[in-house]
Length: 91
Image (cartoon, rainbow, N blue to C red):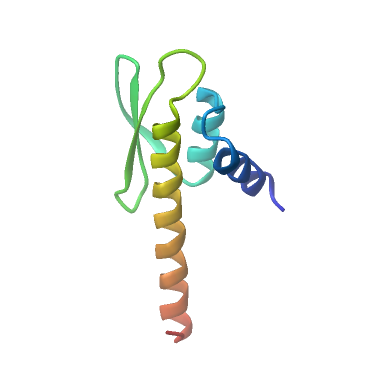
């Protein structure tokens, strides 16, 4: 299991205990880049256009934001798998 997969698994298991820097690194691992910052909010954008806004109030990220980030990562992984299947002729 890769380091990236371990971090994501940890976030899935306990979304209430994720630090801001952990979420930042997992989003960057999945090709999200900080796009816009306003106060304590940072918006990350993936090249596919998917966006995640992280409100960093203190060291911990609220669980609902972690869940939104996981959902965005899952949607990107699904779309990448679909593209690979189309390229290979699988359906």
